[in-house]
Length: 169
View 1 (cartoon, rainbow, N blue to C red):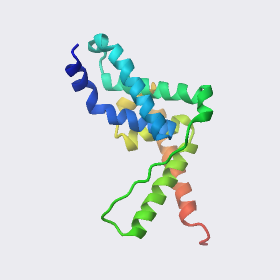
View 2: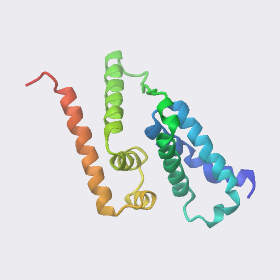
View 3: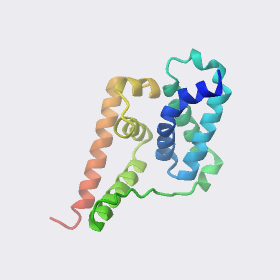
View 4: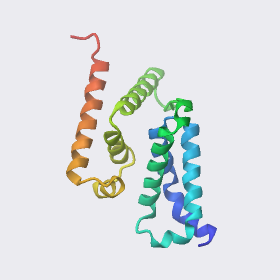
């Protein structure tokens, strides 16, 4: 496989790999490193790419496993927590601050979710994967995916409501 063929195959979902790594590792720098490592591993397996049914699913699984291994390693204690601030220049300052605050709260709430719920929520609601794709990636039954997603959404919703209704009774 030529480099151009490899790039054509991998570049369309490179950002998804990064977002998944960022969700798991939190730190932008760590997520960039993880994405680069996965891309290097994919490059080393480029000769076998044709044997994979779904290269994107394979790459996402590699990213998930790499990040989870990274978190379990001794180096995990050294991970730097860096949160992205999402902004929109076309909104008022107050709306921008509120939106950034809400995004930060959702990120914090997602970090506290059990690993399975966190992964399902990330893949379905952030990455927009179909249930069948999540089933293949996480090796879960469709019912378990729907239950985990429902519980994750409910937890996020309840904790956001608690945050926004604080002091109002």
